[in-house]
Length: 197
Image (cartoon, rainbow, N blue to C red):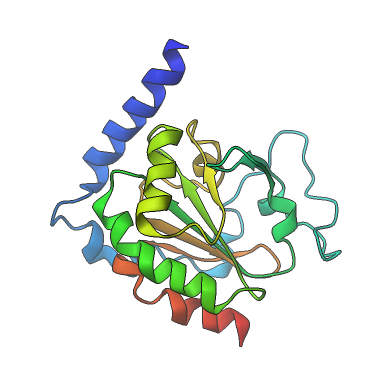
């Protein structure tokens, strides 16, 4: 029990030192500095031990390795990422106490609503307890799309995310085509439009 309490606090402290969330540091100035080329990005997500990425998603699409994981939503519901297969997916990594994340909420919700049925948008909450995550979703009005409660940082580690207020965008085949900050969510709609044509 002690390790579970200490790990999120330690991870949060380390990330704050690295990212300077809420400050006028260089994290926002980097903007697209975290962008990956498709060839370099395809190895971003790591499969769980013994996983080969096989199976089919909700629409019969082959499940890429990147989406071969399960989690729990902030509302306590089971979530199988295999159901995301076959459509572009936006993973929004956020922390409930992060002002940069709150600044991204409105644009992320708008992109989710504008692309409903064409693109998956999933919040991945971490670096705090589930109660704070639920409050963030309610306070920001982002309850129209699922949010995963990643208190242990398992999904964050899977996609090698080391700071909050980060987007990972996958194409319909599960290849990472973008990974970065997007201050205020600016540019998210354009990146999604590139995938939906």
